[in-house]
Length: 220
Image (cartoon, rainbow, N blue to C red; front, side, top):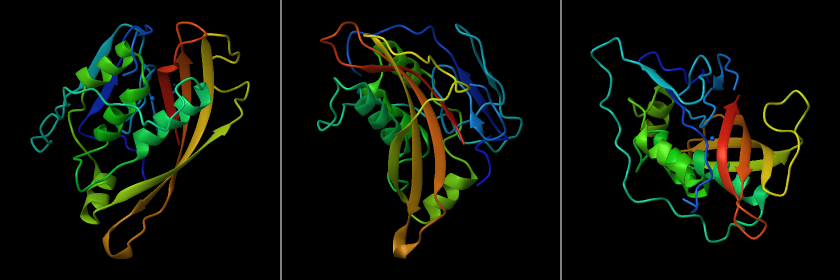
């Protein structure tokens, strides 16, 4: 599959990271999704600096309308152990890539579901910065086949060359999650699986608090 670098739109949404009180993913390459505070299937060609935001406006007259996000916050899956940083990281990635093209209009639906595992500030930034366009060629193909995705996510060791903090502390943690995303459509149609790797940073306010995602970076 080609990179989800959409010709009509490039989004970079950056916010100052802060740990929220309630529970609510970057160096870019041609196949990376670059955003220091959230890497999404709407990719960017270059990283941005904290505290700024920018977007390139669609140069054609045929771009879809801006996608609006729901006002109601997403809720964590009750089966997820929110006191486990690993469990929260896995759940965030799985939520991002668990998609149903018959009920959703684009990749943004996965982002919104994943906000259930983010800090309040981070989740708010996702809801406040929806993408200009809802999907791309891949999404259109999947939608034509009425695809739902299955996600197999697993933790991988963080190498010294990987982005993110290398050392966990009592209130901060880092995880590298590899997700294999398989699209299955109507009539037995099955598309090629995709492998995405997400680097997840998490934090909690104290030893008894739940873990929440503060940033992610996703690459092919």
